[in-house]
Amino acid sequence: MNSNSLPSLNALRVFETVARQGSFKAAAAELGVTQSAISRQMSTLEEQLGIRLIQRDNRVHALTPAGDALAPELSRVFRQIERLVKRTMKNGDQARRTLTLGISSELLRWWLGPLLSEFNQLYPHLELQCVQVPEYLSRQNEGPLTHEILHGELDALLTFSAPAQKAIVNWRLTEPRLILIRPTSVPVPNEENINEYKFVAVNTNKDWDRWNRAYEGKIPAENVQFVNNTSMAVELAQFTGRLMLLPECYAKAATEGDLVEVPGFSLDGKHGLHISVRRESQREMAIVALINWMRHVVETVGKEK
Image (cartoon, rainbow, N blue to C red; front, side, top):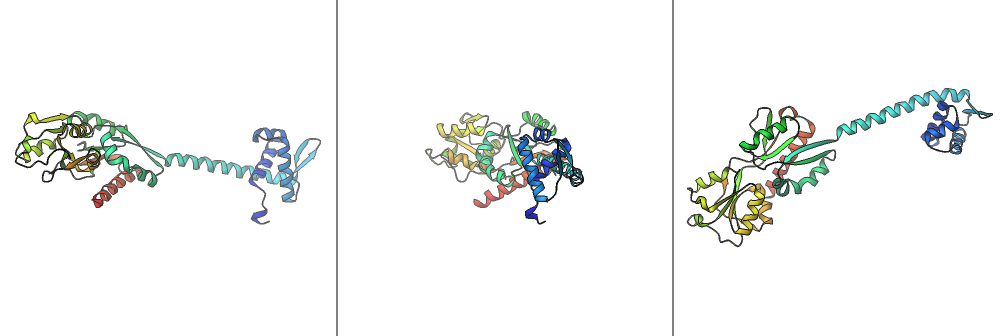
């Protein structure tokens, strides 16, 4: 008998059920089909094999010697198949992994979000669940964010600057370069008149103070409005004609806001973009995949520039 003439797996399953249940009626109930369907499957199976498997005498469905030999072997095979399928399904569930990433709405909108489709294509078994966190790490939020990482509430954290906790490992993804931007409607400033301009700055971005000192503290305090995040700063710059210091990785924010770089006023800051994870989970395959992909993203964007 060649492989093309072997009986169907369904027909063998029907026979195994009939033999185990001892009747067509009980087999039909277990398999959710009619008794006539069971009868047809059995007749087809016996015809294909060329032997009788069941004696049909006075409604008693006793097994023939051939059926008696085949039935227990089929039961063993189907139990093995069932175990294999369950194990495969279990392994599949374990292979799927949801990573909880702490990320600000700014970083999601202007840096990571447009690239997520590539991540999903490369790692279909990984799902990124994004949780809102501040974009800048500060003394006020470092403790709570560190707690969330160490207690598994966050698998990874994406922020400017990084936690100092020894049980957390950090990778710097981007250089901390900042650029000065202006609305296109605002004249280009120079070092002589820069102190006459109005500014907006993110109060948790400590590089603002360094930038101001680098230009001899020329910006009067009354000319600077501090806000809580880059989204608000960008909108104020756009709608009130203010200048602002922007991390270079937020270039998309400047483009969307019709803002352009002011040449000659950039700064190499101290607080580049970091990804942070628990030290004990840094070698987990899903974490490694996420970190390597983000590094790849940074390298690709850098080459495109």
